[in-house]
Image: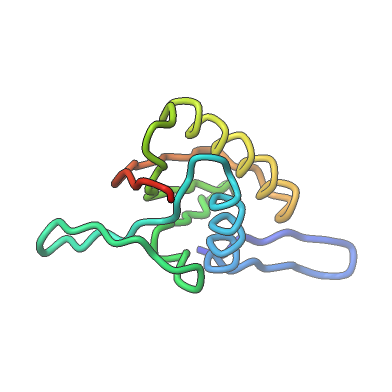
Length: 119
């Protein structure tokens, strides 16, 4: 479902792919996040996605109430506190996506799919 907002001049529709791309770019800017992960369900392998393919690690759902639910599949840096990194990710992405879209972020789920050492 696409997000819709009514204004005096007409209706604004936001495709979930746009929200995913913006949320992904905000997520990789957060401290401790190496990148988004693509999980191969067939053999359970996790792959680090390049910046051009960030949306493959994010699922966006726009509810009937016109709110957003986000699922992130991320890879974190080795040695960081995962709770702190994910709290930071949630608060930053929630604020930025709400500011960008004008819609409320109802829920953010984060799935840590792997850990990488940063050189």
